[in-house]
Length: 579
Image 1 (tube, rainbow, N blue to C red):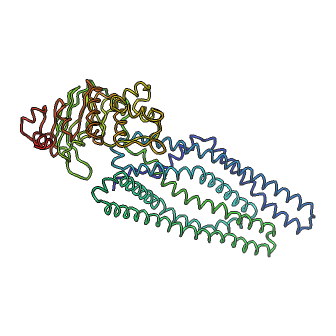
Image 2 (tube, rainbow, N blue to C red; image 1 turned 135 degrees about the vertical axis):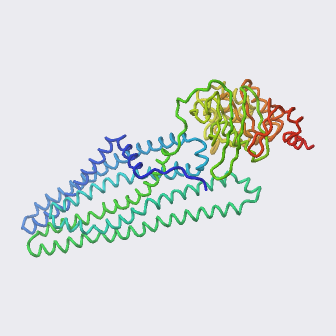
Image 3 (spheres, rainbow, N blue to C red; image 1 turned 120 degrees about the vertical axis):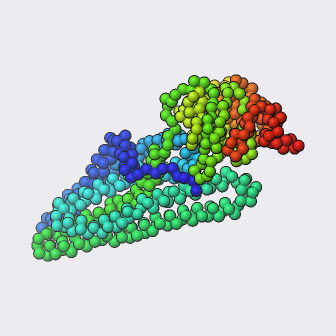
């Protein structure tokens, strides 16, 4: 399973939450104030009801009852209006805060180095950006305001009981001790359980995405049973971890429900005994009992939201964890003095394997066409990733103009070196949107020129709305060859001085691929082109050919020189031609 992205520690989550609150401090203060006023208004009813009982027992008439009942009605209406206003302000605060969380997540995700995303897997990043952000949003919009309201109500209710009779207030608080023990037991286990559940959700998303994207390969090689078995194992892990959080809730909530009854019973017993001795009025006992019965609702909401907070806290830790992931190099890195690329004694190994590159030395001269060939597993793609600055070598150096490529900031790197692989993506939006990603300032003339350079202007002109035709889900679907042509057109717009093609035309038919490569060669005249290819006609057209074998650069020269040398390249060339 792929390594997950980092998860923020609890102290980091608290700091991030405080930053979000400070960013909209006035609204948060308004939410607290309105909730406090609503809670205070809700306290008047039970106290006035106790007054009615005592006044009636004292012989007062209907006028007193009507007056106090009217006051109860007014206070109840005030509580309703204040609570509604508090929820409105709270929801607006939650939506604005959620927008900040989403914007920050997107900014951090876009600044992640490609190698970090690839090692973590797109499933983990997708789960954090969808399921986890949604959970955080629900908490900010709904659970947060509800929790504030309930906390204010609970504090005011307990305070009112102490005001009426301190002894009864003490009985109520002691009766709630059971909730404290249940809550403590739950909180000790909940964070770990919910983080594990979130990680399992990421694994499920990752394996589903990998299976769906590789469906044709799975069918071609008969890998269905293996993929089904792997999916079932991942789903079973997810089920077990979800059952763990369900178990915690099934223990926590019943224990809490029972604890609600204890303070009410304690107040009735103690208050009844005091009333029988004449030490306390019946109205005070009734009011205190009603307050404690009223306490059940806010406590229930608090404890339910505590459960929600554990889930959202784990989700927020995963969302905030992107802050701990390695960042792309910030702006301000040194500027290369020229376009020369030097690979010096480069060694590289992946986390779970041996060395893929074992001391590679290579110089790519500005403006030359270099073809890198070799059998599968020779290290060609790894070399292309190092040349493009996606990964850094474990030892040795890869520099452009004397500056390590991996140390260039993203904007500089995009203008220096661009890697185009056989993987491609069509973004939701129009053809124009898909092209402007590479150069937002490009006009229509530049877009058509880029499309013409890769031979895609013909089919784009035939689309119903041309550049404004919607692509992707809900729009015009594009096959693999057209999607790859769009990717190549983006490269033309980016206008780098060095272009690395790693099987970039693999999904095109031979005729279209040949035409596209010739078009690119014409457009990129004077620029450096490094082609990683199995189609040896690319090597035939190159200025020089580099042959990779078992992580080593074994041959380097022109096509004619290497054929004449009767080495590995000559054998590949004869095999290509069927000799």
